[in-house]
Image (cartoon, rainbow, N blue to C red; front, side, top):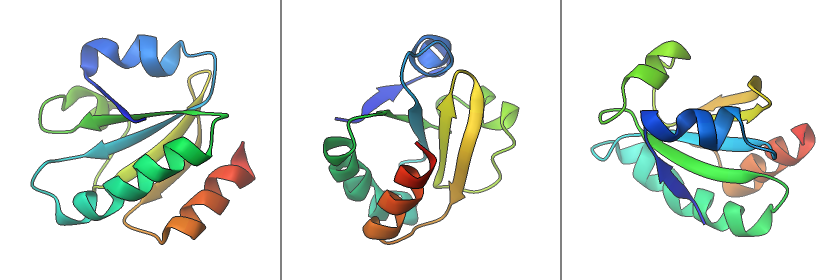
Amino acid sequence: MVKEISTQDFKKEVIDADKPVLVDFYADWCGPCKMIAPMIDELSKEITKINFVKLNVDKSPEIPTQYGIMGIPTLILFKKNQELMRITGVRPKDILKKQIEDVI
């Protein structure tokens, strides 16, 4: 399951998390974000070593600005406040899965 978070939840859900966390930075109006969302949902059920969250860049603009996000969708995998991986744009699900599993 992919949990929606906001600026207020970011520290607790991502920075202080015990497990690595994949953050999906998205917006409701973004077509590619809508394309990748079902893949992220499926991956959240297949890859249990990490947590999956999503953050709406329009509702919580501080976090994307802090991390220099210039385009969406952007996926960032964090572990203990360190960025392990960043993917911008849409990829096929099998490629996304391999990229995530190669890092964790």
